[in-house]
Image (cartoon, rainbow over the protein chains, first blue to last red):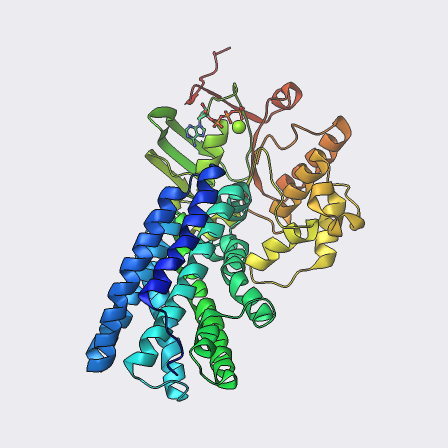
Length: 252
Length: 218
Ligand SMILES: Nc1ncnc2c1ncn2[C@@H]1O[C@H](COP(=O)(O)OP(=O)(O)OP(=O)(O)O)[C@@H](O)[C@H]1O
Ligand SMILES: [Mg+2]
């Protein structure tokens, strides 16, 4: 299993790839060079730190430490989803609740089904995958809701005037938002193996794991991400839509 | 003395530092047919929207059937005090989506016969039901929007210039329909700029600069 060797020199050469991306960016005046450099530096620092932290957490193998790692992951995901909310009140808490429920529920099911064991080497990476997918889905759902409540303002007002409650007045917007949030997950579930060979599976095969095992693992991951993104976006949308109204059931 | 359906006391409405309505005090009897007129921007739509609880007054109170507006659950109230927008928008894809909505919010199954009869009452044909809303003319949209408010009979109809964009014949159709609702006991408040409608008004309320204009005594 040790045929996976990325030496520091090899990594240094990979920097050339970044330079190519930067050069294209500068030449075409896309204006992303700052973001790109920040992104690259952050990726290197964050991954280095997390590499050491993970090594430590896996070696120590304590439940509380594993739990803490999962909590930090969920917290960070909520902060990021909140950024997409563009002013939806309480969006951080809504995101936190949605991502935490999606992540914990999915993990609980996987552990109960004995698909994964409660050890840091399994729980932490899986939490990361689930939380980040839920985060992206929720972010997309928020954006869709913001756009719909803006573009369809008059339609919502009409529904309210007809005597709809908030849920009835927002139903179509909420449905649309959930659909938008889940679309990437569903698309990738449909095309997995045809278009994309997911990072985790490729990584496992790359590292010398039996491809059949890697694929079974990937099937599980696909299911779990489907579950997590639906749970996450449903909770987030159902908690968020009422934030668009005031206590007199009028649009803000 | 019967209790007025609306009892408006010293009503005021302010928005963005602008006084839009001010010191409006009036009672409206149940079954009344009140015509509201006044220059553009004088606050007529704002007044109707407050009566419909779509806006909350910043001063004064409105009582509906003896109780403060806030005493009613908003959906219940709005189903009884039905506001028709000045420039109505249809929602969803087809006319059916719009006519099914009043059933949906009352948790009733869609009664197609009732919807068709309602369309017929504003001289729209049955085939209109599945027409995409983007294909309707302005006047057709306006009538579908009105039908939406009338599928379940409210106690009060607040009509915000609903016949403004209609030709003479269609105006007549809409007027006769509203008249029929009035005769069945519905209280009607209608905003209009139409001189003939103003001249024919049973009761006339003029609003100017957010205040009730006291008529010069004859
Ligand atoms: N949401 C709002 N915020 C601030 N000002 C508003 C708002 N809505 C309306 N106004 C202002 O309030 C005033 C009254 O508006 P309103 O729509 O009630 O007039 P109106 O009498 O119905 O006019 P029209 O005959 O043109 O329909 C206008 O000056 C308008 O610009
Ligand atoms: Mg108006």
